[in-house]
Amino acid sequence: MSPADTDILRHVRCPGCGGDSLYAPSNPARPFCSERCKNMDFGAWASESFRVAAPPTGEDLDVDGNTLQ
Image (cartoon, rainbow, N blue to C red; front, side, top):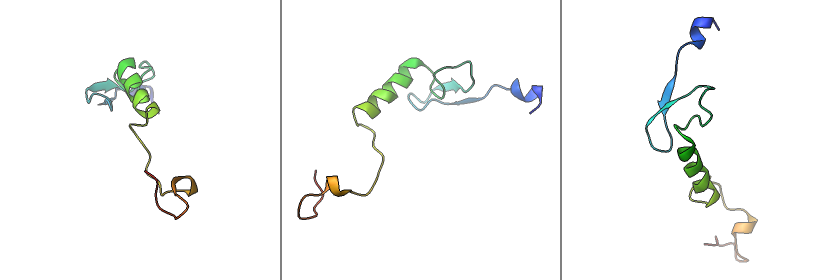
């Protein structure tokens, strides 16, 4: 990578608010635009508002094999 490549500022869409976010080491909240958006996203994961889709496991099934709610 040449020194000229490192001078280019890359902007991405903030996953929290949809605003412009600087994607660079100088932005400690990257890819978020701010600590607020970063913390809001973390809170959503912590409160299980966001989930990763996966097939039901033994813990998710009752004795008859039905999915628990």
